[in-house]
Amino acid sequence: MLQLKHVSKNFGGLPALSEVTFGVPKGQLTALIGPNGAGKSTLINCITGVLQPSSGNIRFQEREIAALPAHQISRQGISRTFQNLKVFSRLTVLENILTGLTCEGGDSMIMAMLRLPHLRHRERQLKLRAMEALDRFGLTDKANWPAGILAYGDKKRVELARATVSRPQLILLDEPVAGLNAEETATVGEQLRLLRSSGHTMLLVEHDMALVMDIADQVVVLDSGKCIATGTPGEVRQNPLVLEAYLGRMDATA
Amino acid sequence: MTDFLQYLFSGLTSGAIYALIALGFCVVNNTMGIVNFVQVDFVSLGGMIMFSALFAMGLPMLPGLLLAISGVAIVAMVVERFGLRPARSDNHLVLIFLTVGLSIILRGLIKLIWGKNRMALPPLTPDVPIKIFGASILPQALWIIFLTIVAITLLTWFFYRTPLGLSMRAVASNPTAAAVVGIPAGRIRLTSYAIAGALGGLAGVLVTPITTLNYDVGVLLGLKGFAAAILGGFGSFPGAILGGVGLGLLESLSAGYLSSAYKDVVAFVVLLLVLFVRPKGLLGK
Image (cartoon, rainbow over all chains, first blue to last red; front, side, top):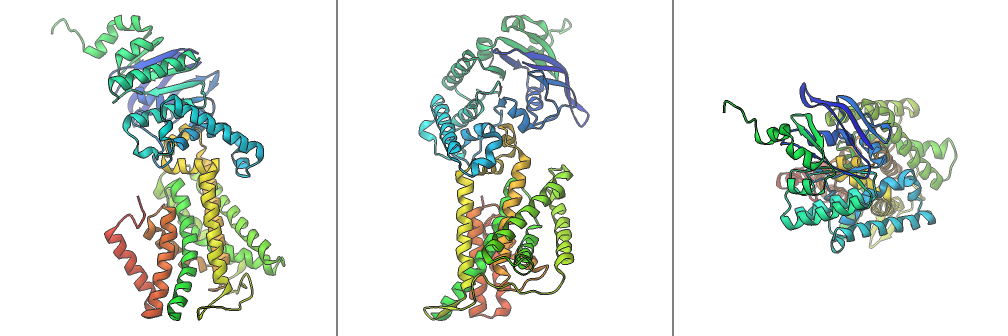
């Protein structure tokens, strides 16, 4: 569904990603792992258009998206969450979720201003869907709170709800359980499993190996900007290159 | 008491104008993070288009008013689309200096089209002062206060009840996240300029019958509107209204009770004092 070919990104001559090539198959959960600074977030930023890759191709459903601006990539059906939360802190929780649906209001945004009857009906529908999403993530009673005052875990859930409410084709999750306690992690894991069983394709960046090994169909390992291994969780766990990246080189001289 | 009422009304009147201009500054600041100096010329342009609508096209007041507001909104959109966007820059300093340049260009064009002479714009309804508790108030002042309230109501409705308004608040809150949920930054910027233009144009149509109309009438008014926006907290809508009315009242009360020569001094000294105590303005975040 998503195909990356030789994607590179340099920051002022410093390579953050070099020649990264892998694919995200439809309907599966692909996990992207690697030590800190491996380039995982940079890669997600390149896919979603927050950054432009220096070179390489990113194809989504047979369409080249590497050069598109972020909002157009979003309109192709790719949504994401951020590692360092980016909720709209001045908007209410419900409004946050509704922004995830503005894309669907699509070109009728100007028309919507005229409040035509069928659009008003549509607006109600959108609100209903947003409320359903809040319900799924247990945020219903906080719907009218400004998102900025929520606790960290709740903000993460707002982002997840916002990213999934439009039923996007591909969801990119940048460390959705970082900073959460065991119980919250289990809840998010459950939600991810639910999303996958309902046919969503996901790319998950995560440091929580227990979660990754548990729910990923495919694992891609990134180290120093290079893709060093791809395979099932079992295969990757045995891969000497991966062990080296995580544990350091087991040198004979050491 | 009569004096006080008189000063109160004149303060509210100029305060409403400052508030409209300040709101225009805030709308653009919230979506683009910049000070849009073209705002001051939107005010002059509003008066000029109204003048032409009334005297060259022979339109009645209300259609003239609507034409002036929408005309300035369209010019504002052209300014954004062809003046700022081709720069393809997100560097605030670059964009702010572009607005300074565009402001000079627009002022030049206004001078070229309407000339340098002072003109008189008639008030919306005939100038027969109304007596309220001994204070005499021009109908135009009531129009200014009334239409400013209407504009603020419409603006509130737009931002809190329409999808486009929601998108604009989302961009103001977090531009990156807004792009990632699919909100097109370009259209939002264009809309914010249209709104800023409409607000500036309305201010121009309303105020020039009281002042006079010439090609740079907006400059001083715009400066006051800018000060009002800073007083209230740059970017905050309630702050812009509070700052505008506050600045208007300060001016008229100090002109009335001290000396009209000192009205700007008093107003700006208070502005400075407020900013010493609260650098982010009265309602700034």
